[in-house]
Image 1: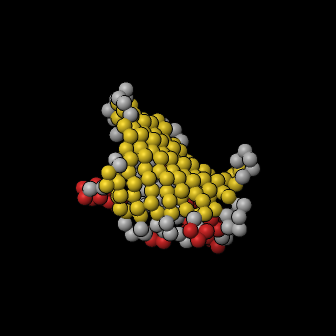
Image 2: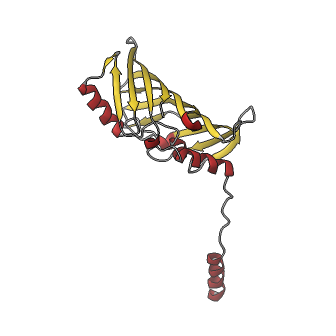
Image 3: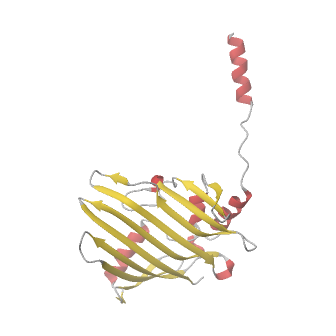
Length: 226
């Protein structure tokens, strides 16, 4: 009996498990995203944030920034030229997270993306649970997010034209905070040299902290310059 068990285990160890065939379209999209790393892109962006806490009047924050492939430089804050303090503060915050760009599509879809079709029959890649470190709002919530990437196949090179990232269900953490909704929508278009580039992003969230409810909506317009 021992000999039979040993033979069976040996056969199992020698029989390779067939790997799932690669999705050629997904492989092409991920490769295209990796071909435009942060150092190869440049843009200017305008950021408008509307925040409201409880019954207080909403507050609007405006700023413009430039990314040159190496460093993010604030240009204006609140309609005025950025001060040295503004530059230091914003650069410090930016250093703690990835710069925005089409290249991040590879991070989101390079793992366990699943190919589906939307109501119009268009190709969509869906990911349930983003890789660790993808989205951090003071707490890494990546594992609690769902992403849907709409693919544009109308041209010679397919690319993701719209990415939607959303919270799968309300999330509580630290026993003092709750995130009810969270959504990011990125829009991409061919930019300089025909490479896909991020052109618009909207981010909205609603939740409560220490019993105070609040909402935030940020709209960012990107103008690729390289």
